[in-house]
Image (cartoon, rainbow, N blue to C red; front, top):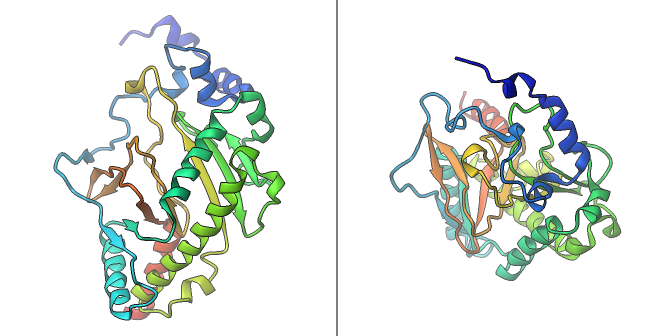
Length: 297
């Protein structure tokens, strides 16, 4: 196959460096009016996200949805939910929850807050820009934390706020979404405790076991932003990945696009108004396996 002059002269390192130094993210590219996305975002093939033997699921398969209504006052109802959590965690590693205690108004305000942050003027956002997401700064804004390590950049920008175990001073948070970040982090932390209690019971343990192990000590909020792409067929917003967490609680907007991998298939998870998606993270899977070996060996 012939190699073009453009391919020979392509300097990926320089392209990455220029993008990083702009501190403008993919939103900056859109604002600049580009019609052709930089090569650093190009997938090697249109189907790069699907590994050998993996296919998108053509039939309608629905992610389990679990109703948390009554779990704190009705022991029978709680036992039913524990069984549902156990089954969904074992078969899927994912489930949706409704009646979780966070109001629709707060969910919508959180989405508006994240959108507002990313659609600010670039010069305002630059004060939080950093490629070091594990440093001492409680708030980090960037595009692709693994920009220099990943073979392909994703078409997204991210706001990351570390809210626990060392809560930031309120004034360290971006003013445009400060109030809802504080409120939402408190609410989602309480919800996380309830989820971990149910998972502890599903493992045959005391409700507070996973919490006492420290599984709820840290809490980070990530607000991803996927601006309109002029060549969506060439790139992807977020590559297939596993979450190195105990649990992830995901709030979708109404645009859609979320998929989960189950039984060698990618399954669409259409947004459900008011629902949150729970992902059993890799850390919790490892702990669950350990308990299984101890309990059943």
